[in-house]
Image 1 (cartoon, rainbow, N blue to C red):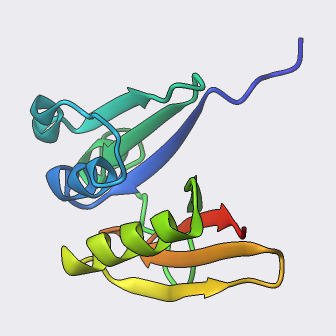
Image 2: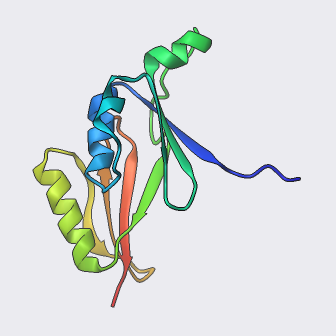
Length: 130
């Protein structure tokens, strides 16, 4: 049998701050998870998203150092319309999250924007152009 992708891990500096960002994208992560060092959330498509604090990573990899100098990973969130891309981007930046690329109509026929999560990961928002 070929291995199947089951989960995606994100290493975070501050668990409550990180989880709150993803809650703003509609993920119903229970608030009690804020106190954990490792959190798993199962998406409707079955993929698990897992967050680990720096302390948890250090517990089994003592010499680990955070990546630096560019992107570490990216996630892409499909929106139902270009207007939803714009509204989601505006809501997140109004909440204080940092913009990476303001919404624009991309040559690949999508409304597209990028925002940074609290750990500096680039999060794409996109929808097909009408």
